[in-house]
Image 1 (tube, helix red, strand yellow):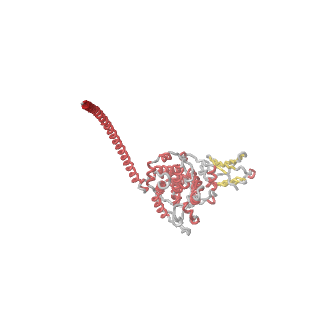
Image 2 (cartoon, rainbow, N blue to C red):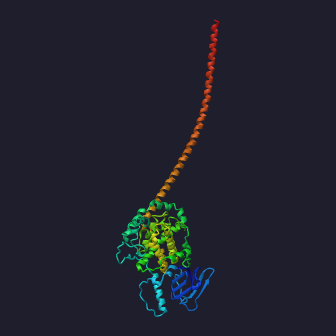
Image 3 (cartoon, one colour):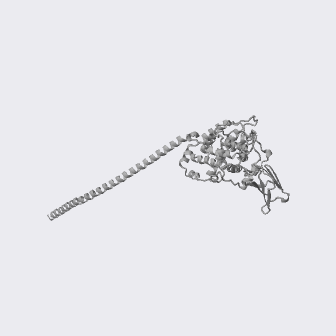
Length: 493
């Protein structure tokens, strides 16, 4: 049997189920309605939905078939007019049979009337909204020791996976020996590795040469257009992926639920950084970046407080990726806040995209099996109020540069002083060169004046010399003439 494409809509009194079944044998179509269960059968299609509220067959239901489009439109009355059915776009949850849905033990409340029931629901919601995310939770512990080694994965439900992967382990996670490393050791080794990887020169370079980073900080990712009142419309590809997710629910205690929400922040941070720095485009490094910035995916980390997860996100974003800029990292945290504030539909859309990216990144697709697939299923039944409360509290978390542990304040002060000293030195050098240039110009001017005076003196000496030479020549002529006269006289004698 094939599961057809479908979507659900509602108004105050009815639920509309639209089923795309172009190859259906219309004459054999069967529809079943009972309480919160709806079944549709028309060979080769079969659809069974577990609804979030009860519907009723009272003679006001109707069904139509559009033969041109191959679409069934079925309108069914709600048992309680005015009731709002939540999560009609959470397809995986709708497809999960009631028999597979596990219920947490709850205290049974004897309902005397509708008013008490309504009050009970309101009290439950108020209690949920007041959940204290800041309280340090006790780490989750397995009741039974596992022969396969340490637990990891979604809700710590996996073990022994990495034994079969051998050399591929180091291409998937940074954690050495995942099967025998305790949660405490994971954190210690992770923080040590981050400290060793942090490069002060890279950080300072990005601090001052940040033109490209400033451009990326102006980018508006898709969730910027989502508001608390907006409805996320899933694409056909996303709907198909939801239909193919496993149909199950989870029996979790409160501490583990808290850990899952905190891990969600960690995973979404790596994704939000990738989307922003790639301006919404996937590339071959997207899977690496998501996993490297998420301690959950790279170190199998579990968190017990908001401060811990925020510090981890900031530390890793300043140690590993191409752009290591504190303000950029803070902006990515704000991106995570906006994703959560938009509600679980937006969160699910991001998780489905992560699932796709890791599925195309060998061998990181293993992390889908360990974490992302279960997150995609679980988030569909998660409390929307609690998700939005988490967003609100995340926005209020205050961490300083000193808390990060890389001595960023001292680094920036030293860099600023060095930059100032360098600027002062450059200014002094320029002034010195100007002074030398001015002195040289003055000396050249003085030399030019001296040469002019020397030329005048040389000219005067030349004229005087000519007069002396003329007198000397005159004397020589007189001497020669005297000698000639004397010689002539002697010859006559």
